[in-house]
Image 1: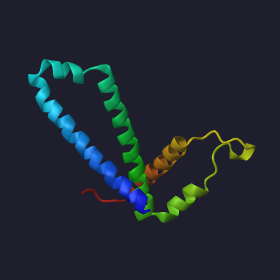
Image 2: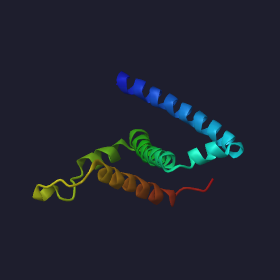
Image 3: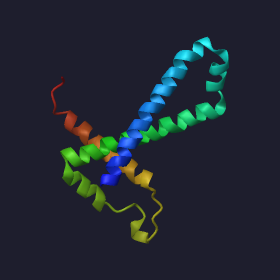
Image 4: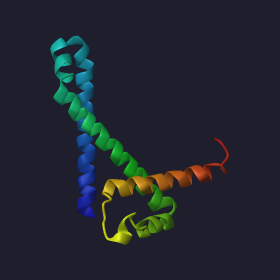
Length: 121
């Protein structure tokens, strides 16, 4: 677990550095046409889109993880006990992302169902 904690700290710091560098580039780009062109190039925009999608996926996963670990550990047990759709015929064609999406949706549906009984802020 210490290794995981160290990796999370390293990734967090890397993300902060990336944000600072992109922020500096964005501030300089309007005054530098060559920099603006370089930042708009396909490889640069693809890398940013991949990073954005990865961060969105991680954000969804972390939200789900926090919900399971802090609010409803029984829900986590239920989700771990669920059989994949094709488990009965011996084929497992579900990926981790498919399982995560279903789990994410289950948590979201439960949250929305519980929200009906809550008072608005």
